[in-house]
Amino acid sequence: MTRRLVVGISGATGIAYGIRLLQVLRDTEVETHLVMSRGARLTLAYESDMTARQVQELADVSYNPDDLGAAISSGSFRTMGMVIAPCSVKMLGQVAAGTCDTLVARAADVALKERRRLVLMVRETPLTLTHVRNMATVTENGGIIAPPVPAFYTRPTQLSDVVDQTVGRVLDLFDLEVHDFPRWGEPALPARPSQAFETAELHELEESVI
Image 1 (cartoon, rainbow, N blue to C red):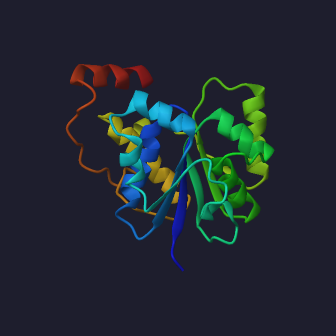
Image 2: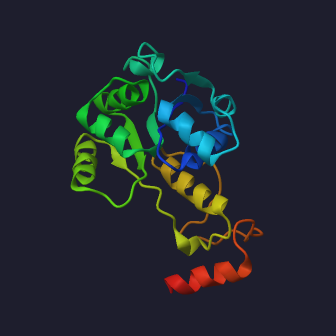
């Protein structure tokens, strides 16, 4: 059976997670099926120099967010599951309520009803009680809430280190080990030159968390 993973990208900030996820999966035998919400396309313009077409080209198959007749809207279309990276609280609410008026929400609902792995990289802070309750509802239905929380024990020196570590942890949830990233209790990988922080800024960051 072809190993397929549905990748949803919603309008929350943090579109780099969805883009990097697709980039990493290109080096695997996993077939990626991408659907970007309308909000994701707006966020993309703010947070990346890539166009929507360039992001879509990272996937094996891409869908219109309004195409509720797409393959991924049917449980008979077999996949490993779905990850929404990032997941807005609006999308979280739709998944929790079972509202299927967009393809992203419908594909997520399919993953839940077919008892497949659904991972939501919820990107919001602070959280209201409604957000927390929606997270609880998704969890009770079998989904996994995996906020993109950075791990500083890896000593990140650039933003891409943070993104890569988070993407790696998310793909672990699908039993996909697709690229090396630092793990607790294992030998650290060689440090890469910093492109995001000056040395002084990095020292200040480290001192602030000690």
